[in-house]
View 1 (cartoon, helix red, strand yellow):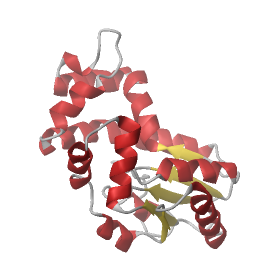
View 2 (cartoon, one colour):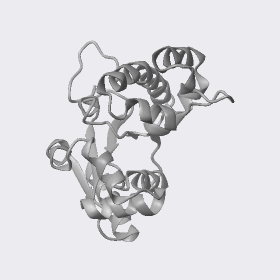
View 3 (cartoon, helix red, strand yellow):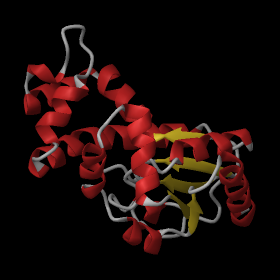
Length: 211
């Protein structure tokens, strides 16, 4: 899947590594992308797994072929771009197809991430991904950060942002790992229930504590 390759995969990275990888995650509407931007403002690089995955499925011809073989030619539009709406409909209620699609995409993202890591010079680097705990990627990180918020706040944010109905957002949330499970797994937790100033203060405090 998306984790780093290693003959001996431990929860703690090699202490001699140049950079320590910090996992950053959060469910839909949590604000993890905003936190990622605050982290960049503090001078630390962030690898956006979800964004890179969206780019890779359009740039990697081998990946395109495999996805079309799995989902059909409609997986890509006439202009050759990934048909997200079609793919989402295909996998939303079919866990088997979703699993097979992830087995195609995640290794490509893993390789892309490994290449990105090699280029970094900072002692702390951050990996933003929605599936940090689901794919057990936290085991390959020095520390993990969870951005969370109350369910109703998250739902309203997504409704305002994406124009979705309450039920549509709730359905997506129900398919994600429950927040209480993520909270148990996270090393650091940022609660995004108030305002941007508070969110920024919490982000800076967490970074300071990790340092």
